[in-house]
Length: 349
Image (cartoon, rainbow, N blue to C red; front, side, top):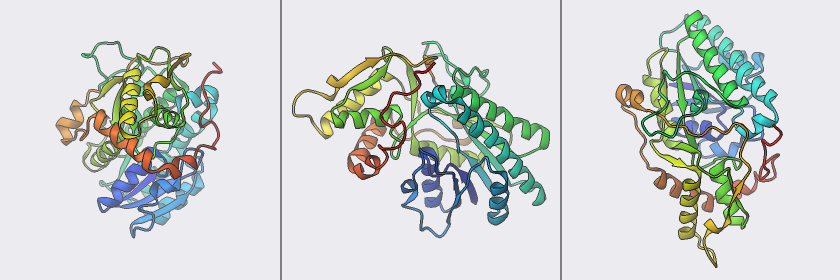
């Protein structure tokens, strides 16, 4: 299968690219190389016979048309997006432009290409989204997001992703474009750009800095190891039912405070401090505006229909992640000078 992966130099996208190449697929990696992208993320497969890279922006329709015509993909896996909630609070315009307008351009380019090819029944447009489109859940383990949960986005980021989800469904219903959609829980793992919670905690701990936790740390997330997510996405693009959406979760709910304490315990074991624990560096900071209380995925559909479920617990995944950051200092040090890294964002509201 030849896959056109947008955002393939980003965190989740690069995991998809690496896994797809390992699985024997051909991959065209389309990425604008904005601040969170890094071609080092795909260096391990960059010279594979089935890999090609296209430096392009999904907001550039002419570039998209050229890439479809040149590569003739069998499926699109659309991961390119602005994704950091804090950045969306400070600058929502970039999220509207990329996540909404960019998705519209990609849908139209895909539809035009698909029509010119005679509308083959095997073509797929796989839109990758987030559980944040569903809003916030109560602190009740029995209540989780399903594929039929009403949309209730609370941040500029989640609102832009909700809008893009609706566009994809509309292109299916109106034009017959053969789409599948997925909504995932919080990802973590190797090559995670150092502005999100897990890498920030690891790198701040190693640097002897404070470990910032929003509010009282009681916000709950379902944590999904990125390589498990990549496996799920490739399963959906090949086996998912047309027009169907699938929620992908890690089956690992943790409060932010518990997650940080787990990371500190792993670091205490793998790289002990001279005195005390890394947990001594935990600091509580003012909460993010509109911070959702809880996300949790009900993965029943993808498990029952496609036979997929995560392979690691959050403790196993975090241990792998910490070890990866310890072993790959050159990768993350090169990114720490990029705009906004290491700074508190999202406080302009």
